[in-house]
Length: 313
Image (cartoon, rainbow, N blue to C red; front, side):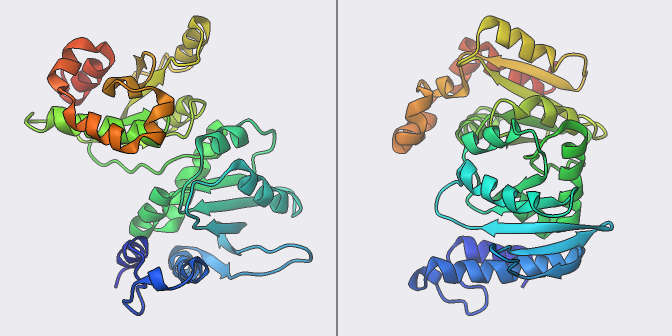
């Protein structure tokens, strides 16, 4: 069984080794199964991986080597997105090691948007964040490939949360949105709008976990040969001057297409931002009822995105 297949079973709460449902065992046991899976993933493309060890007064999930550097590792699989305090705790462990040490933090339950934004504004950058999609891609292309991609973003742009995006098609479009709900809404509406449209360019919808990550992630992605980026800029909470300043950070790059969404993606389905997380069933119902042809006619931002995808630009 491949690493990707084993990870898929774990997502379904099935033990890949026994084939039995893990609902009858504790979350800690599932965590131990994932730790063993992760160790095998690391051994397949990195050097000198070391399992759980305990320096005086603390516990670290492991370490591994890549390109002559040793990295510290923390991995968690909780039921909810992790808060900033979990990342700060790990960063404190990294701070106590040799100057220049880098930590890799993995959360299979992802992170809250507030957590990523809070860590982004920190003065010390010594932790790289992996979300569940990054781990899935690492199972396909190798952990080393994904980490090198993220390290470039951290080195060039100071970006700690760089979703791994591999594009081979020259006409590929990466659509950057602020969060997971925006990703869900955008992806679902595009599927509806483009289902009967021929010659749609390949695309992916990528959450940046906060507005602050959009310029840096767009800059790194635009370095790929042939890649183009649509950056959805939500004006909710921004003054007109803030909006202009933010757009200026994206200007001058012919591969980046800023799209201003007023006030935000959730208004495409007629909801407020605060309601999209609390009223999940209503959100799903509204997505299903949206007339995307009418949305294209009435909303300039959605129409601009459709033009980019159908290459009528």
